[in-house]
Image (cartoon, rainbow, N blue to C red; front, side, top):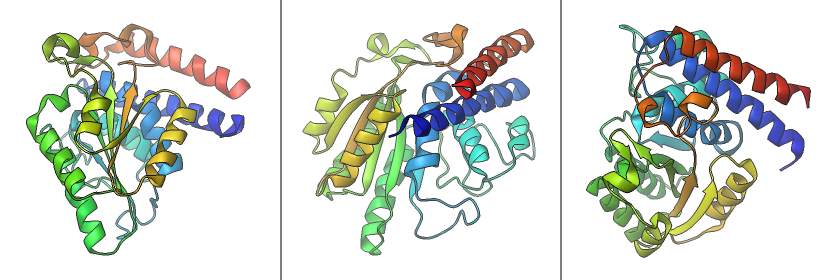
Length: 281
C-alpha cells in the first residue's frame, strides 16, 4: 500500500470517528467505545476491501458485511454515510423515532446494511449461512462479519465457527475486535478468551493476528484470506477501545455512554486537530 493510500484511509477513518461522536452526542445514547476501536476496519472495508456500490446497495453479486456486534452501529453508519449510501446529516438522527438509523442495524430500513443484528452471536451465524448460500448459488461474493471479544463468550459464536469450518467456507471471513473491554469490565476478568487465534485454528480456520489500527497489516490479512482455499479465515484485531479520543481510550465506562456537550467539544477538537495534521502531510 502506498503512503498516499494510507493517508487517504487515515483521513477517512478520522472522519468516521467524527461521525461516531456526532451521532452518539446527538442521540445522547449509543456505544462509542467499540465503534471507535473498529473505525479503521470499517474504513478499510468500505473504501478498499468490499465489492459494494452505494448506487445499487441491493446488488445480488455484492460482498456482504454483517456487524455481529450490532451495538457498534454508530461506526458502521458513519462509514456507510462517508461511502455515500445515505447523507452524512442522517447521522444526527441516530436513535430518533422515525430515523432509519436505530441503535442496532436494520436491514429493512438502512441502505447498505445486509443483516439486522444486535443479539450477540446471531450475526456471525447469519453470515456463515450467507456464505454457504452464496456457494450453492454459484456466486463469487465474499462474506465478512465483525465480532467483539466480549461477544465471543456466546456459545452460538462457536457453533457458527464449527459450521463454517465443516462446510469449508473459504468465502467467509470472521473479524474479531479484541479491544480487551466489555460492558462489565476487562474481558480477561469477566471471561478470559485466551488465545483466540489458536482456538480458531482448532476449529478448522486459518487465522492471523494483526494490529487493528494498521492498514498495511489489514491489507496483508485480507490478501491471505482471499488466497486461503478450503477453510474459513479469522482475523484477530488487537485494538484500543475508544481509539482516537483521549479520554475514551481503554476506558470501560465509554462502552455504552454518549459524550455530553463538553466531552463532545473535546473529542471533536482532538479529531479535527488530527485531521488537519493528516491533511497537511
